[in-house]
Image (cartoon, rainbow, N blue to C red; front, top):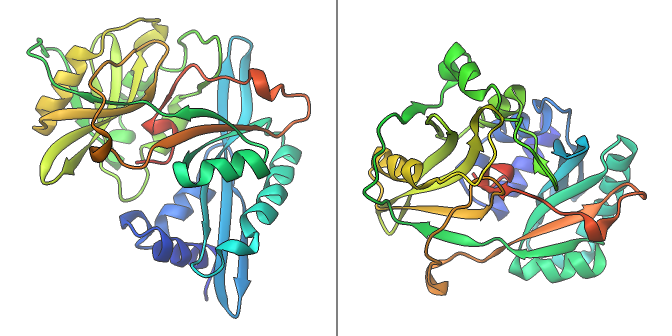
Length: 306
């Protein structure tokens, strides 16, 4: 029996090929195992074939006033030959209405340069501009005392993971930042077809994975979280050096911004960068002031990039 997950996976595999869409396990994890509840999604079929799909998944952010239920936008795809039929606009507005009815106040996403103009003009989004990308060379700094834990089911079930994750959601926030509770982080790091590493020093917990560029090993720097409610600015350079050493990487790549852990580095040449990812925000609840909506922190792990 072909399920919605199978049909959506087949469409995504055809239009966005990659290991995460090799089977339906990724969407099953993403859409049904989320601790904040199931995805709000739509699919469109024609002649027995899925031609369009879009979803938002519930998330929780927090600011100085406390937690807020919101959503993350992902997997907006239309099959080749059907792009000009208006499916994204139609099913998107239906999804936003349902997400608002479920109590989600606003939605965050990333858009490529080709699409950002359309979503801001026709779909009610605002853009914060391209996420800054940094290339971080490992410095000869002492990296002693940094623990490295490859993430697997055994580690996520361990008391060591609970110890490291405790207190990571307690740093002060002014504008909104993703809420990384123990339950949320365990779910996010259990994503199929991913190979994460959790790193810890006395001050920081970081998440990374190994990438390569033209066969050169690169460390993808996905997340920096102060431990035990710490506030910045904290210097991530010793951690970055330790991460690069662990992955035997010549450099680390970072995209985004962090109110407590400012990451510095070189801006890669335009020819070496992928299409820039634009941070986009949209209100769902009528009483949200979209113009003042702002994030303190947004990094790779806050999105679905890895």
